[in-house]
Amino acid sequence: MTPLHSEGWTVRPSVTPAGPTSPVTLVVDDEGLTQIVGIHPETFETPWAVVSDLRLTRRGRRLTLEAHVGDRDVRWRRHDLDDFEEWREIVLARGGLVRRRPPRVGVVAVAAAVILASLGGVLATVLGGRVNPTVERRDATNANLTLADLPAGWGTTVGGYLAYLVPPAGEVVTSTPSTIAGTDVVGEAVAALFQRCLGVSNAADRVFGEAGQLPDYQVSSAVFHVATPYETEVATTSQYYRSTSMVTRDVAEMSRPGFGACFAQANATALLYNYASDTTPPTGAQSWTPATYARGWARGGVVPVDLPGVEGAYSLAVAVVASGHYEVTLTALVPSWPAAQPLLTRLVGTLKSRLAGGAAA
Image (tube, rainbow, N blue to C red; front, side, top):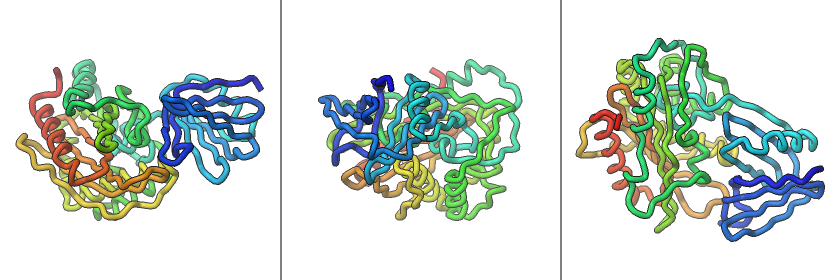
């Protein structure tokens, strides 16, 4: 085998307890797989004898490499297709599986903003022409949060936990008359969980079900991150709909009692599956209605999550802001929900003001 030196990966779980998960360089040769991990690199060599069940998945411009290593399931990810063909040959040569899945597409109304990789549904809506696609694309991008909206000390990351949930930053997804939803066993399970929680049928559900509609454009922000005093991550995904009536009908469902708790639990279930292949729904979700000075509609929820291999308690908080042609979902992973609530409420207010004033800048 020709040795492969492949940079730019993240790994979950970390190689050592509470150790770094990025940057990761993978070196592959006839002897095994070596990981070079961290800003101050440490090297970990693993012989092929303890590596099994190799799986390589390409989804759009993302690669995921999975394997059973010793007594652990390990997942590596990267945000480009560098070395894809080389990895494909390696995985197949070792009896592994190579899969290619469709890129993340906004197929199920607002749910697509945060769990596109996991959720599906059969949609009947076919979109017509657009008045000004250039303006729509710009407005969809400008509706999101930016680093300037966050306090000093925040930065961006490509290896955060929300990367397992939020589509890649700046990747504009355009729906067309030929865009259709895929089916996904986990997505169907999460959709069913949400629908039971909210008390809505799949046929009538606009969030995860058959009644959902395609946005014209969807685009996500970067994942924003701060390390002190505790690791916290925030991201947004905006969707621009051709008709304001689409948003109005979505808001009607999302205004039902308990929506925030149900939505948070569904998203957390998808995060845990993408991160650790765990489909057990977390418990303890609660709804949250952000009280802001800015006028506008918003609903949210929060649920505790236990991330395998990660020390400390975390909560996943979500909030949907809707106005006019837009639906914007804010997603945050926080170590303390009560402490994080004022910041997230302020960010919801920023989104409300942005949408009320027109997202174009």
